[in-house]
Image 1 (tube, rainbow, N blue to C red):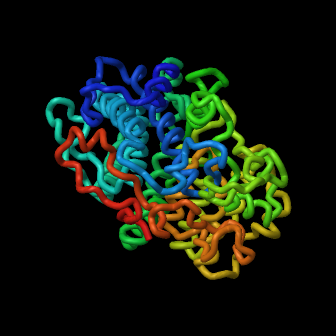
Image 2 (cartoon, rainbow, N blue to C red; image 1 turned 30 degrees about the vertical axis):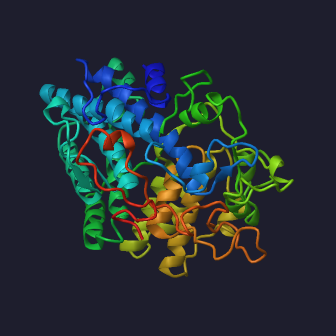
Length: 474
């Protein structure tokens, strides 16, 4: 099952007449459909979307001696860029989750219903965050509706939350047999962990609302805490990749194995300068050197003689793809504690989050939690939020890259620099406008509607510039 999903999820687009929102689903059992769908979500969100998000978050930049990602690094997106990822999330992930929901409701298999509902909600929320409007309420209906309407992101969020609440209300807490457990590639059928994933996803959605729906966000989060909802204490994702074609981490598969080169993504001065300024040992894990050579973000057209020696971003075939990592869970909880509970417990959650982020690369923060990365307990709320979000940003490269860019768009952190990163006054870690950028100094806030959708669906909205914020953005 794994090889089939990665092969379909990461390959180049083919000509066919299958609508991405209305794929045919062969008769199958939840046990067969769920792992395929889980892997499809990981393949696209952890592959093509991750690469783009990581460039936008400025973890790495296009090599000056290659050209694979030049248009992404210049913010020169076109509607065909994300066709494969978008199509596969609808066709190979969401359609299967919906089928699992239908089958599990018919058989009252509430464990599989919860697993499919959470993963469907997770996948839909990522699409809504990227495109702002997507087919949701009328999607996945097969031949019944070949022209599904687009729902706005807020409507999608409300629908996801309602579906999760409904799934949580059912008697899902059962011990799965070995066959059913093996069908779950995320938690091996541990339903306590699925409950935690569901609650943590709800927390994430409410935090995304804080700028535009503050009362609703507060009510949702305080309700979670009033109910003593358990949150993730370990990561939720796919960790079973191996170093074999079509079985490896999708970022590695797409960027290294299929391109047959390691050269495309090089160390960005933005991220490396931050790590070096704080004596962060993770610079070795991310770039293979304590003092890596760098390229200023988006400066791929330069003839700077030092650029060909810039460090390559380190990737491994066995890297996990996190949907929500342990570090992210703790840091989200820290933010919630600061926003709504007077900071009670926020420092401990922050410390646990930073420690978990280092553990992802088999390292420890050591004394950084009492020095450079010490939580600003006596600081303002904005200072605390900046500390939390910047540590999130530093935890995502390689396994959850997309989130660094999305959280920047939600919170404004890391801050945006007034100068380019080659200037003496540049503050390490601040986001810079790329040297070859084509959007007039404005940063990307969304993706373009995919051409594959527009060609088939007359309800696709008019194009919106990538510099226009999504509904929850700053």
